[in-house]
Length: 101
Image (cartoon, rainbow, N blue to C red; front, top):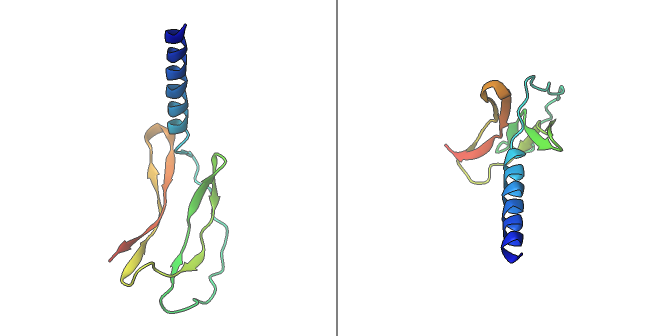
């Protein structure tokens, strides 16, 4: 009985791990359209405009871009996000990030 229970627990852990890994990326066959954003004046000359960023929420992409942000360190620049082809599954969003210039 103890051996049988340990097998059930082991299989449950594997199933949970696979389900979490499978839900880690969302692929789309048609890219969502970003809304029209009017760019306001920059808060300072150091701020960088971050455009077209998508975030996964509840199994779909939500537009969260269109804002000014200050670099985390002097001399850093913004590498914009982009869509990456995922074979037959469609495309997925690779988020932008700060990096040294």
